[in-house]
Length: 341
Ligand code: CA
Image (cartoon, rainbow, N blue to C red; front, side):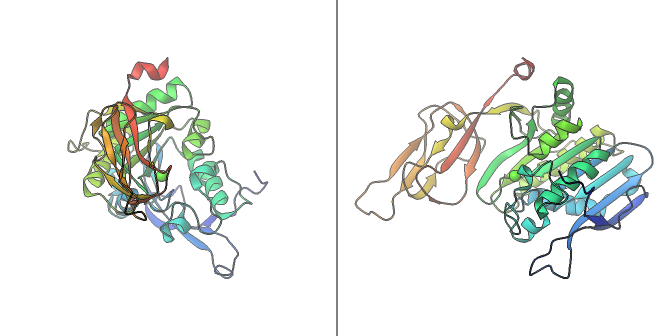
């Protein structure tokens, strides 16, 4: 980490009550930005005593459900419903959002692999540094809303990074149950230390992440699951007053992603014809789909099978595939006790 506290500036006054809509000004000097800064949109909605909760989307730029949810929340949430402070960034890696891309076109930076970041580093590193040392440092809870991106669609899920110790994990699980998505994916504590989840574990901030559909578009059903779940979670965190909505509430199923060996890989180059949607329950040997080798008319289509029993958690979106590309990823249901063993 550099010696500079941060080079990002803002007109937002974090201690001011009411709604403020503004920008974080990211400095980046290249041919396009020689005489400008990059304005990352930010809202702060504060009212009286209570926790500070950070809400982010657009960590990956091509994941849209969260961007839509937070853009609307920033403008429409009545500050009188807030107890404490919400800090809302619907497009956290704004250069990636503008490019409709997972990573930033300025530096190829994957924000979720850039923590703890560097104030003196590339644009993506500077955003990660600000998020960890300024925004998360003043937060008592965080929600980072992801989706499958352009390449994949997820079964609507809360996604938990199971690091940070048993007490933090219990608080994250309580948040996941309040959110009430159909699935809660529990990822091992050995996940990447450069993620925002890992940053939250370092700071002791309970963070709830999500994977809401995806596919480079907005899934209306997943959006409603996200909207109701986020409201319930904010009531659970104590930062929002009033009734938690009862709709789109699931008794969430805890699942664990099965390893790479249970992912279905394309057996050849061609066009993928899927036979299942996310959420399907499949068995070892179930036919997953076909890959049609379009360049060779005399060659039959190849079948791909699931190699394990499980729930379809992730499905590939683009039909054109190369040998080895993942077509599906499975998860299996787990017991909460196994997370604390
Ligand atoms: Ca993502």
